[in-house]
Length: 84
Image 1 (cartoon, rainbow, N blue to C red):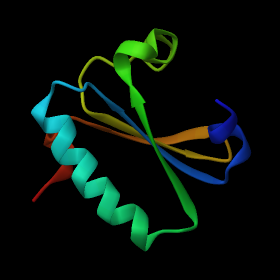
Image 2 (tube, rainbow, N blue to C red):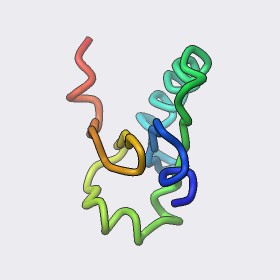
Image 3 (cartoon, rainbow, N blue to C red):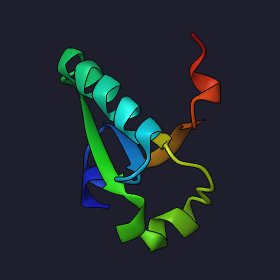
């Protein structure tokens, strides 16, 4: 919570350690974060964050949520919204 509220641009990737798709997203986000030092990229284990999963109504993993100044601005659910 402090990272999201005290950082201008944040991308939070909700994952599960046993899901292969979460590992693929993690690999790509690692590459992207090197190109965008103005943003903070955070991984959050869904099993260890039931409050946030419930509060943000996350139903599918992986899910990535971006925040601007602590306010949710966009959400990518699974692979369907990623395009090519």
